[in-house]
Image 1 (cartoon, helix red, strand yellow):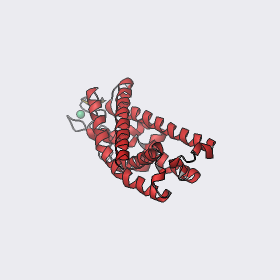
Image 2 (cartoon, protein in one colour):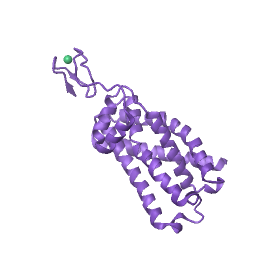
Image 3 (cartoon, protein in one colour):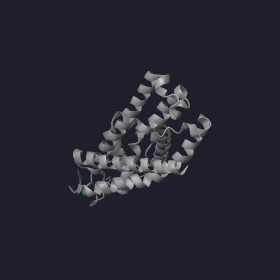
Image 4 (tube, helix red, strand yellow):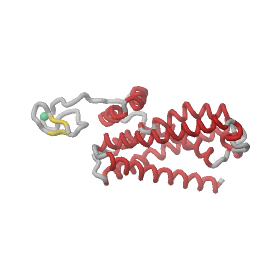
Length: 235
Ligand SMILES: [Zn+2]
């Protein structure tokens, strides 16, 4: 809660003007600057999510989801070891983009809605738009994975990263363990970020936020895996 200094009315934590006297409460944030927020997410996630909550427009939410979709597509190609279905790495990258972008854009309203509904069930205050902002910016580690780790994976292992013939572990064991380990760390970081964002945005307890994020991750992971298996059995 934020107290109006003029009329002493209690206002929502993320209100910028008093609901009673229209007095100034805190600076309004009309837009989000992508690089500024991504940097703040790394430096001080609480402050970043506070700004995301205050922002009138949750800019770049769809863009971040599209990048996430591409990241999911590459992970799927790796997980299901289907590199041999593509002639070369360039064609594989082309398909990851072709599948990934619409996948990410489709996941955007689905994941945001689930996050919003789960939050509402546990007494959270976040609106659908807040859930959209929180979930999209919590995907930052996947963006870093895609832009930083994937190029290294492609340069080190090429197609073998997706064909497992021979197993990438047999080619460069240390590099493979370091890269897979780094990806795991990024996933854990995204998980923690979403817990922080859910807590800040909903103004609820930590354990409720953990519960929301655990259920959401379980649902999304199962959904994506199921779709992947269905797509594989079709082609
Ligand atoms: Zn007031």
